[in-house]
Amino acid sequence: MTAFTPWSALLGGVLIGLAAVGMMALEGRIAGISGIASRLLPPWPDAAWKGRLGFVLGLVAAPLAAWLATGDAPAQSVPGNLPLMALAGLLVGFGAVLGHGCTSGHGVCGLARFSPRSLAAVLTFMITGFLTVALMRHGLGS
Image 1: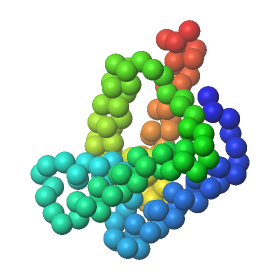
Image 2: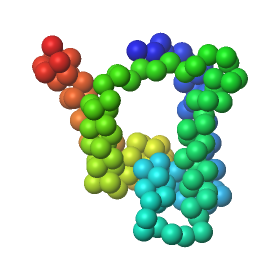
Image 3: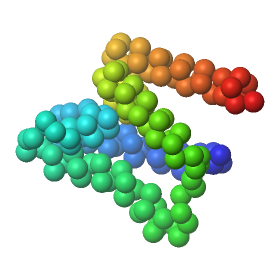
């Protein structure tokens, strides 16, 4: 686990908020990462693919930029079990498609717009996350 540091958390939250506001102001679109990434795949050929690709590449480049700025690689807190991570990624991707959005779309942008649908989605994935952690720590994982 990585240690909680309030200043880096605050800075990260501010940057995420600015990115969401900037996307809405400049593009008129929600900064939902699952939607942006999925529209990079066929059959979504349109003129906006370059902006979507830039957004996704910015997400990938952010830890590299932090590494260059600080000289320390960002802490890695995910397990090294690649098959389990692949399965988890597929399940998260399926859930994002099924729920018509992800934490950034519903949790950051949707809740800020007081969307009832986003509130229901956030409650669903937060409760599911809490139950999964409880089950893994006190049930299956013990």
